[in-house]
Length: 114
Length: 114
Image 1 (tube, chains in turn blue, red):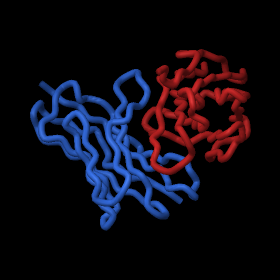
Image 2 (cartoon, rainbow over the protein chains, first blue to last red; image 1 turned 180 degrees about the vertical axis):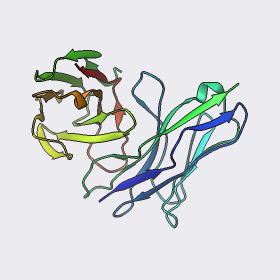
Image 3 (cartoon, each protein chain N blue to C red; image 1 turned 180 degrees about the horizontal axis):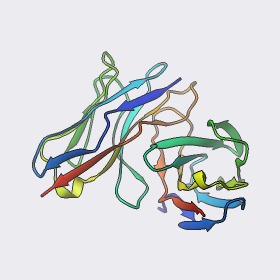
Image 4 (cartoon, one colour; image 1 turned 60 degrees about the horizontal axis):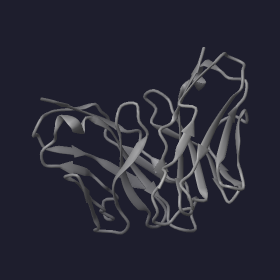
């Protein structure tokens, strides 16, 4: 079946540091890939997405590139802010003809200190 | 346009009781997904409804059930509540099942079983 593996957290950084959160996936066919963010006490919000190999999703300074050869979709940001402190979820959506169920990683907590 | 709405925001029940959680998807979305987010366990897939039918369910006991109404809103019922059912229950909707459309999440219902 489909699965998503994220690096364990928490990830603790100082403001303006570089961020990488690793994500790898297992899926049949070519899924769409997503990063969601969950701020304390809230639901999940879509951060960025990529629908095919070599696509780069980007939003709010965050980027992730769909790497088919390594089945990865690592999240990066060049300079984090305190306001980026949240839990980040990597997810995949199977292509048509699959199980159709979005599959999520366990989430990685990011804590950014001033 | 209204997002995914869930009610109630918080729910406190006694062990053995029943809980009913409600979800209204984004207008035009026909697929509704339910996830359980227990502390430290990420998002666990519960149920998927599409066009009024249950299409798939996760690895949860039968006391977790639900339905989707003709207007695509959905209800999650949890019978014979146990303490470990305490969690944030998230509902998500998508325009169509699978493919390249992302899931949009509600704010969740925090269920506490005492």
